[in-house]
Image (cartoon, rainbow, N blue to C red):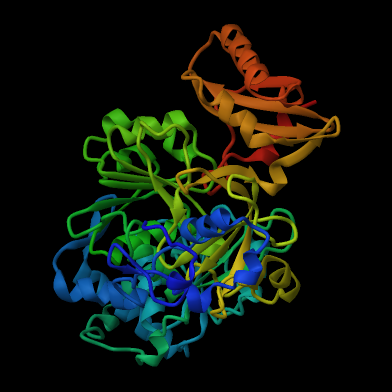
Length: 543
């Protein structure tokens, strides 16, 4: 990106870089809000943190899908096990289901509970909701307790439940409100002639500001929070480069993640809105990955996939947790590898970095188009460039907020004081800093910054050192009582030489109080349903 000089000439006009319109610094930047920085840091605050304005290819998820229905109706849209649907047949099935929902009273602005597992019906349910302008709430009944499903139903104010006949015995979804079993309904001959070129919603209902889906936290620590994600939020990442991952007709995208995980929307809506073919996995993740051109995963899931068997791989993107440098370098040798970051509240990811094995350190890149990232201190003031602070995300990635939780919204969301455009910014809860190349180095979650012996310790710094050893698959460090414990999964049975090497390296590179008191080797680190390391379960291995 071209540097923007903060002088009078620059402040008086529109500035362009690589034919992409940047924010008009003169009209938008609140110079008073960055006065605590040096002039050089003020310039870098703008150049590093504010991405170019780039309109996405589509402004609405449904429009993106229907574009490919009209352009390539006979291309395979989705496959699962031995079953396939073309773009046209998927559109037809979704239209049938949408008409059934419409008959039940579902209209634009309503919410539909989509309680299903990975299947063709899951995709049909998603498109059917979009066709009515309704938002869907995705959950997998196999792993979410019925009580939690009912809580989510009530919190989201859902009007109806879409599910599968596999769960017919769990008919208390939504406190016994109306339920449609997708597979049963679509097998009825009476609906066969319902579809065609049917427009079910008006242009107004497809507004970019309309909610596309509502994602809920796991709820393991209390009442789950529902995040409202708009079409605008999604189109900005899915139908802009690099978030589109160069998906095009003929590109096979693996669908391996849990439906309730925001990265699953990257797989599904990113694929179908860019004309690709979605490969929905069965029980074996690697079997699907071997057939795919694009894989989207957490680093923990990616470690379980043998890259040597992925002969057709073109692009890999990881997010959700810190990525080991060794893992990134391995996949960067055979694919376009993107290390990404961003919580659900900033729409899947809001920073991306195409990795090069020659890089000195693994970054999470820069803000994606139409977005901003600010490194701020606890008083929401800009940190000096190179100083670690809290990452606040702004721009088109910022979601509408939590449903019925105004107090939490006030804590996590705030007006952007740096751009006078009325936008919100979001406290990601991640620690980071800008490096000299204007890229973000991730320092883990604020929650992972702990006090040991009176000193502040960043837990991810320890894990990064451990994961540099070629014998280590994954590592994570936690605070237990008043000491540090590192959990390690490795490829070697010779633990003693490896452990000594780890201890020596930590002692050489980090302050003495960073050295864990205990190291526990496990064959495999426990995972959450969303494919991340489950830190809560690690405590089961402690005395």
